Length: 128
Image (cartoon, rainbow, N blue to C red; front, top):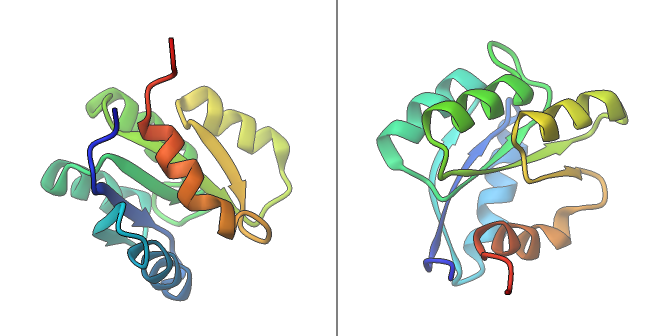
């Protein structure tokens, strides 16, 4: 069963997106925002410091993109779930993120209201 509140780290190079996602998720009692990062490298460092349950990361970021940070989180912190958000329609890069270990890719333009359910589903083990 998921641990509540679900501890979430948000990584996106756009401050407005980060703070918007944080504000939106904090309105739900099931979530606690434990950190925000402006690139993948910062997100990876914060994973060690704040130990989130879920990282929501942008696919395209400077320094370390969403694919590489997902790959590194899976190697260094395999218990953390990663959800990738993107404004890009580049399906090959989205598939690369899934292969790296992301549980889901969500389009920024239409996945906003689905995100709470997606995060909760990522933290809930499948029913037997």
